[in-house]
Image (cartoon, rainbow, N blue to C red):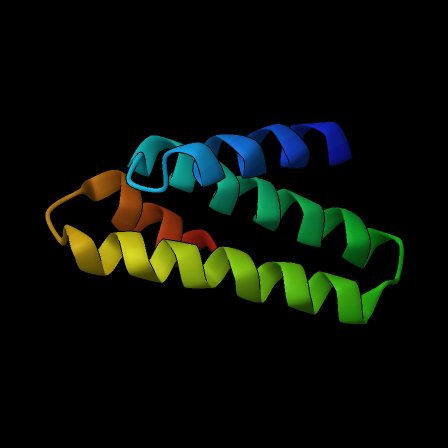
Amino acid sequence: MRAAMAIVDRLTAHDPTNTGWQRDRSLNQSMLAELLLTNKNIDGASASARAGLAISERLAHQEQSNADWQTDLSCVI
């Protein structure tokens, strides 16, 4: 999971306008939050979920007609 997060972080840092990579980053944050919650790391899970939510909100607001982004927003932990 850490390796995937590092790759997506590098990609989004390289091209912050790439919404596909931003979406991947948000989904990775949500998956990390679930993993941390399973391991009873409530604070880490909460921080990761908030980070994923912030990205999803930004993308959903950016293009309200994008069904994928709207669905992602509705599925955030």
